[in-house]
Image (cartoon, rainbow, N blue to C red; front, side, top):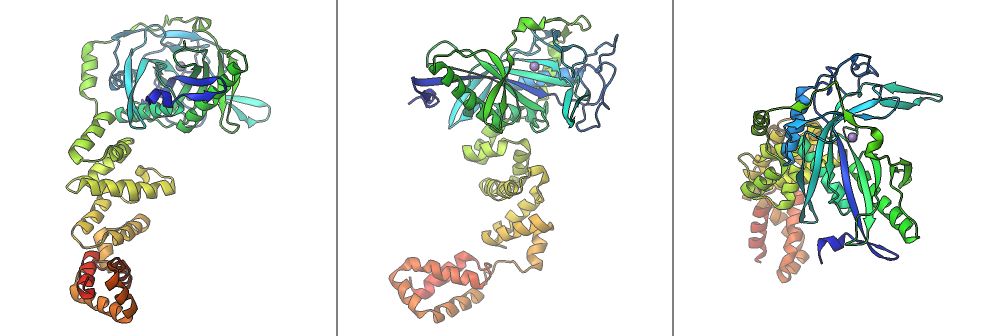
Amino acid sequence: MTAKSNNLIKGATGDWEIVVGLEVHAQVNSRAKLFSGSSTAFGASPNSHVSLVDAAMPGMLPVINEECVAQAVRTGLGLNAEIHLKSVFDRKNYFYPDLPQGYQISQYKQPIVGEGAVEIDVDGEAIRIGIERLHLEQDAGKSIHDQHPDSSYVDLNRSGVALMEIVSKPDLRSAKQAQAYVSKLRTILQYLGTCDGDMEKGNLRADVNVSVRKPGAELGTRCEIKNVNSIRFIGQAVDTEARRQIGIIEDGGRVDQETRLFDPQKGETRAMRSKEEAHDYRYFPDPDLLPLEFEQSFVDKLKAGLPELPDQKRARFIKSYGLSVYDADVLVAEKANADYFETVARGRDAKTSANWVINELFGRLNKEGGDIGKSPVSAQQLGQILDLIGTNVISGKIAKDLFEIVWSEGGDPADIVDKRGMKQVTDTGAIEKAVDDIIAKNPDKVAQAKAKPTMIGWFVGQVMRQSGGKANPQVVNDILKAKLGI
Ligand code: MN
């Protein structure tokens, strides 16, 4: 069976294929806005980061921020896309209270970045998703409706902040693929340092275009679901909207092209406005801005400074550390996780390091709902714990207790082991004494064990318990076998 047929969904009239294209708005990492020097810092008091340009005072002229241009170029390079040495800013005209200019400065016919691609991995299959374009544009301000029962407010702090709109080709065929694509894109932007990818703050949000068709048919009419702000909601929005459209068509109706909103509470999409066409916006080149032009050397310099990207890091983790594809994927999904792992693995066994980072550390972080930046156990401390196992000072089991202590109380792992007497007992004399004790107390079990050697596990458990988990399990096993004669 091909992967494509896996993605088909059943309707009353047979199979349907979902077609998804995404427009992702990613806030550019930059201290200042796209056309003004105002700060982009998040969480400031309303209207405190607003210049005369951002407030669209008459006669104010926009001046392009070179850092935002560099960030867009870096992103284009990271998406293996064509960089356009000449691009044009246009005015996209519409009225909204939080858009004081009455138009958004965006790029229409000549974007800064052209076609590229992102590779995603879904259920073990690599799929190439085409990028149509990336353009720079201004963000709008924010309307606030919930502060007062009969007033609305406008906060212009976000007005003029640089966004990269990254448009995919309609290459996605399922909710899962759409989610994998946004996750991958977010990871790439984070590695590049061009967007922090913080979806809770709205710094990365997706407009999701969904249509359905019978396999092999022409593209259906699409609906655009605006501003979906979490990976989970993107998946839900795709499925919900596809089912809605299939229902309409199978009932003999026709899908209207429109802009819709996804309501996560109700699990439905609802109409927002009928979709405007590009010509409704009366795009025209912004007369206040010259075409944006730069030299190839500007691109080359940025290219030379690009960091290692997720796909490269994943390949390196598999090749030079011998990690499984799964472990490599988990570790590279967040750059901070990959960095943490590499610090732990330096000079140590890579697989053991990966196991501890993925199972113990991530397990604990997930339980607390925190990310690695807030881990109370540093990579150095985890490395020291692994060294204590490696040199047989503590057992793997005690190491988990030690990890827990370092997690909640901090401190130097070796000191904790010393002070709390957690060292593994490898002294055969002491272990032999414990083994003799248990054998003497359980003659019936001894008889059973001689008939059924797997019973040895019960004895190992008893000795380990008596030693408070500190006996070296291998030594215990060897002594027991000798004494029981099995
Ligand atoms: Mn846009």
